[in-house]
Picture 1 (cartoon, rainbow, N blue to C red):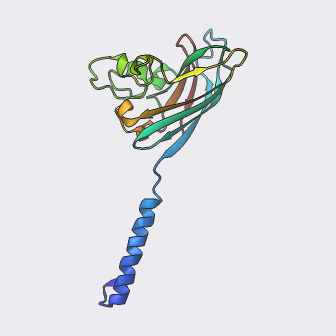
Picture 2 (picture 1 turned 90 degrees about the vertical axis):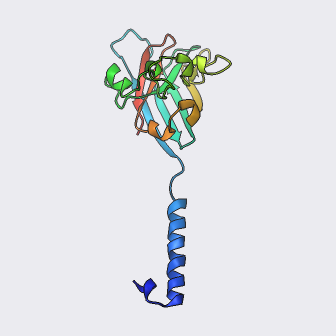
Picture 3 (picture 1 turned 30 degrees about the vertical axis):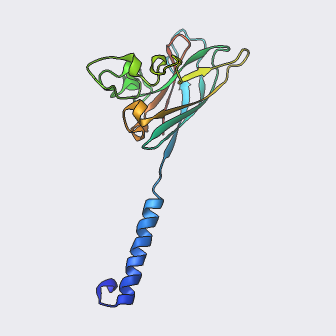
Length: 187
């Protein structure tokens, strides 16, 4: 109220104060958000010998998604997939798939350009997406080691969706043959 009493000095101070508060509000807004998931065995009753554990952190912004995983208890000298899926819980296959849009390859987190067509080549988590045919979302263990450390970076255009919508979803670890063997919920 004091700003509008006709006192020019007071009005000037009020305007400067409001501008500073606005600047602070915009500068303190997070440009990215990070969540972590503790990976636990998934499908324990299955015939998988290895059930991974470890931590996955995912940092998202409007422009990109960065997944960093440190996994243990994987088969030595092997490779397998790691992906964000559309689900919000690790209870079963249905909760892992979650609200995946039609056409999203195996429930992987991305939006296909045409939901009526399942086109695995659009899946940024899969091998056919990249020109070299190599998947970027793959863990590798060297001979004699059961530990994998990897980082995956995908842009909003790779995912065809704002990466911020990946928050609170599940991360799945796949065995070398493709079976789901680990799961964690980003929080």
